[in-house]
Image (tube, rainbow, N blue to C red; front, side, top):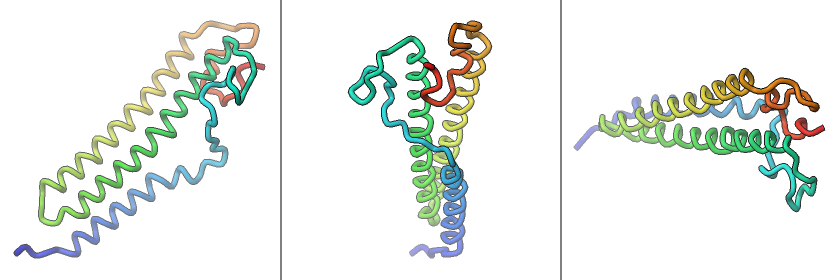
Length: 151
């Protein structure tokens, strides 16, 4: 019969709790956090404004925001919880602990890829975008909040 080491379990649970607070506390501090009610900014039953070219950039912004904040963030949080659960319940099983650590590292790499690709795309679009248009440089402002593109 294997002996259960409760101090390791308590330390693992505390580490998972600290990581959980570390991951989710920034989400509580967004003062201007808004939920996108509709990804499509025009021509819908909710917003009957006819679509223009500038709405294409707002659509792109809404899709990227939805994927980054409504999909990637909560999914990463869930994966951190699952990895922490694997580590906390590993006991004397090194394979289960390694599986939990692998989930942690894969999640961190995934988040790094998502956010660094956002930075790369932002840089490319801003640098290579066309100059001024009658409405200003819309492409350089593609990441602005919805509603600021078509004025």
